[in-house]
Length: 112
Image (cartoon, rainbow, N blue to C red):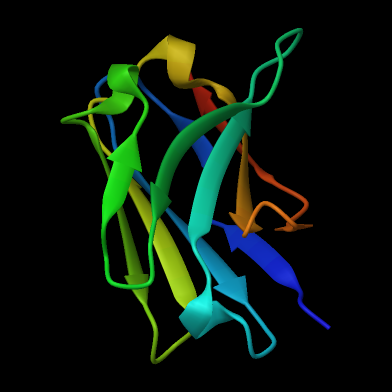
């Protein structure tokens, strides 16, 4: 059984930073691509970043240079470091293992 749990969201001012964390229980983490998605109110869920088992990454164009995805296979953790946050980054952020298993999400609000 795989369980995904996100943490680290919160309220931050424009230009601020946050680190999201995602733990993935079970035995699939080491052999699975991991994803961060987000969903803003009234919008569809969109891919923010993903990372392969060897560390290869992909990013949504609008977050390139601001967000960094990383993983710690020893701890079954994946992270999303977010810098220079903007109001348009406000959303619920979801972590996913293989796009099959999903967490409940963590709210990120960027507002002055």
